[in-house]
Picture (cartoon, helix red, strand yellow):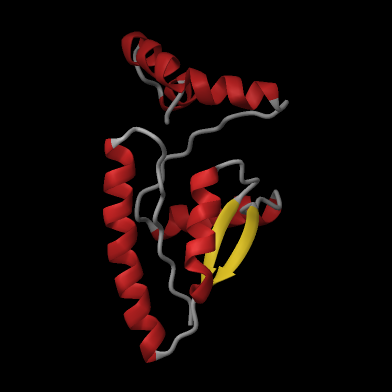
Length: 135
């Protein structure tokens, strides 16, 4: 979520700055409690920008916090962990590149999408589904 710092940096007007200050306040406060700084970055599909972001991540040794990695067979345990909350990072599913696992993955995505809709309708939690394929 953009905040007032982002609005200043990109030169937005006073009204937009005020709106982003209100919307970004939660992230700013969370960062302050942890003696950190919240910095919103907007990136387009632009090779030059992506290269610049890659350099920033490498130079500052920024990485993703991974809490636990589960095999595809342990998907129920992974879902329970996410639904319980309290993770200190991302919960990942490791999937081998075999035909059976690709079919299982497709079915899992459908199940997660339906589960996500049901959970969000009850305002209990939010599952974030991101799929990365590495070969």
